[in-house]
View (cartoon, each protein chain N blue to C red):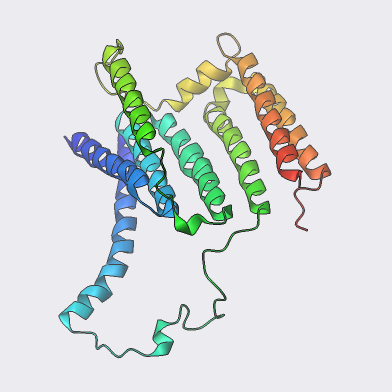
Length: 123
Length: 163
């Protein structure tokens, strides 16, 4: 089991290494003088091609997003129950299926309530 | 040996991230370091052989709680100013120290039942057996958990919908 997590560790190291190297390679090349320094206004824009950004990035976000975050947390907790159930499903058989159906049906009431109240719609 | 090295790297990163959460002025960066702290705790769970706990940690804390905290900061109007230093610094320090002393006292005083060696089998299936099986499982508690989550959903809808 730990061996499998070793693979995840290797992936993690590769991801960190990739992110670090994409930042460090230009910095090192600049430091060594390989890359010439020719600043101009276009180089300092946020996106060289694409829409110009408007305003600051520290804006206050629409509060409706929080609602989706809250619902996400709730259904994330449901996933924590679904995950061991799915792993062990072959041994649990019909009883496990009925059990989980009841669980999901109870939570579906909340989902239907949210739907009926129109909170899932973006006005 | 490899596990020891992994544990110490994770532990150092975890404590460093936790310190960054407390010491950074910019609360958005503090929140990101909190997520890093959660993630390293998940890594420590893996090193201890608790694979399901690590998965749950990543799902709930890194995923859900991290998103919730970051959203809450992004919805706050004056988040750029960070946390201003207030008059409650000294009381907060005292309460924090009291909490630390209590925690250390409890951790040292508890008689932990330690396994001789790290379990090598995946634990998820065993947890599912203990939780869902008909004879010795916690079926009623599981369904009550569903009702609790339902109450949380409806409560969140009612609270957030009010203008």
